[in-house]
Image (cartoon, rainbow, N blue to C red; front, side):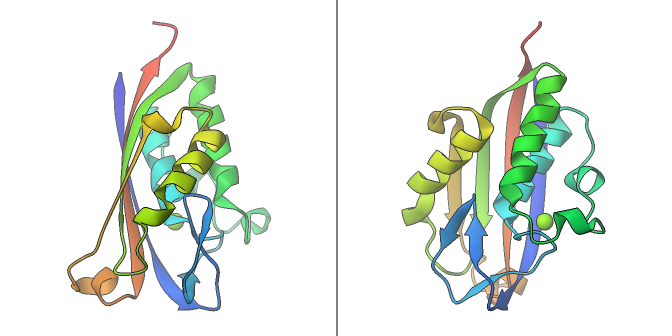
Length: 159
Ligand code: MG
């Protein structure tokens, strides 16, 4: 068994769609990024890569690459699952926390879990999502950004 940790934060800006966990969230702002800015998927990818000893998302999908401009982060997640699968690892479970002052994210959790489990080829029960605010402090608390954390456990299926 190996553990992995991931963290990401992106700035909220106007006139962008807010995508979290591969799901479109109703909000007046979205996340600034080279890709679609899905902080939750980015944190999940980093935790998966970290657990497998495969570095980080920036190494595999550099934001200097034009091919990744505006790309759906779902693609990164599918690729990361393939990368850990190629090293004979399978996901045991993943636990995530999203920090956003607004909007309320809990109502989207069933849809986000369904989408993430489909992309990752696991059951929704293997994915846990939590959301909180930053108690009005710092960039997240001032509604300038959304951050996400993820911890995962992977198992070598050949052992
Ligand atoms: Mg990111």
